[in-house]
Length: 342
Image 1 (cartoon, rainbow, N blue to C red):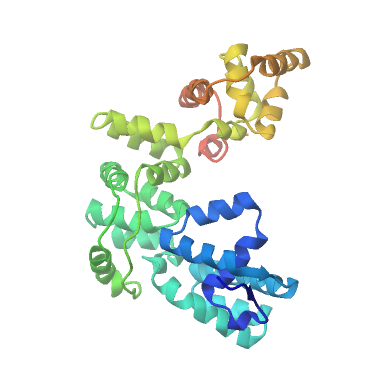
Image 2 (cartoon, rainbow, N blue to C red; image 1 turned 135 degrees about the vertical axis):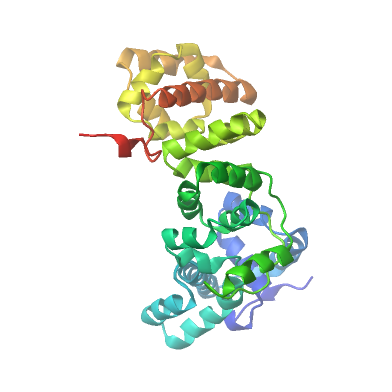
């Protein structure tokens, strides 16, 4: 394959720009990005990567700048609409460049399912959809940002919350015709939408993310309602809702309460793969001597199975969840702070 030299970004294809962008990233970041792409796209980009002989710094910088501008414009358009993105782009760059970038993102933004709902006030949106069938609400909720989905879920009646959560958890691929039909039903009241391609939506991960953001009372009611019908689903959701690193969200008093119920061997094993920030937080809530003993245990522990570490972490997570249920600790952002009176 002949080697390529680029003299201008304007003459480059999208695939060539993607290849240049990957060259500027660290190896791990580039690999992570490639794993998100279709095999055929990866093959095309890899072919371009192999053919690049020399990359002038000016070309590299232009490609990175264009990628940044596109990502920024996409965010503006998704959150505030194309008109909002146009205003901000025109304020931050040459109008010709602004229109070029807007043209590149316009089609993609319009294909985002239910994008027009992102700007709707939650209460207004609830008024529109609360009488819809739970399957319809589940479809809409699955396409919303998690924080807005949590607000919608919290505003639904208890029985309907449970029905919606079950359907979101079991949702995988959705036919674009179904999505379009639901959109057309809302069109006269809210906005217009174009057809979209198949996409992976919903699932237990979505339920966990949404329930993490609702208030504690709403979450508890939904989980208790699901428990009698599908305890396995409840357990799967619960394990995804709060992971070991989320202990960073527990205040110091709560950390101390948890540590009273964890023996040193288990803690040393659990901290084996913990982040430095989490280790520092936990050690900061122990005596210097106790922290030193844990660190020595970790040092002399030697190789351990990942499954053993994860099991130890899950046991500690279960303690955190139990103490939170009992009202003995508070997890930041979980709604408990709203119930506090100073």
